[in-house]
Image: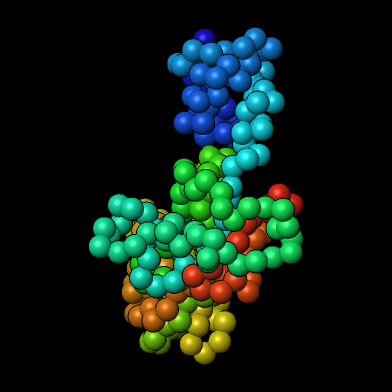
Length: 245
């Protein structure tokens, strides 16, 4: 017999919001199950029931900001990484905004509360870091079954045989887990291009070590359909409504 599931979990599974956001919307009376308002935390429903967010919740979601930062070396992605170094979020200031005529009318002095990285970049890595207030985007980019590709340019030192190139593409294990297939190719004589659909801790560096390569530099240049482009190091820009990961 089918069991009821928490409404917050169902909203998250449907991709409508994160579970934390769902709890907030439920408390505000902005969630309905089969047309009836649900306003008690922990409320449950069957999977076949129609669960919707009301317009008030959608207005709140539309006001949430997502930005792209070109992270320099020396900044940590998360506060719990290495406390002696500044967090990348500290670079999201009006002074570091990369101006675009496409952002006309948007204020660079927005409330950054709740702005958090959707994914990690090591302290010694650079490039595209997405920070968002929107749980839907965070789940899309870093959820367990995220379909989003992440592209990296990796400067390496050492010899790489055809056999080991194939191992980088598929066949390596990290922490006892077989890695998902990756796209790996030479960009030029010193640089490899990696395209991954997962992001284990220091994954590319560890993969390279396993085939005898030393990573000299690592830069993320794309997440899904959005590229870093010409965004300078240390600068940030808004992700615009017409852009989709």
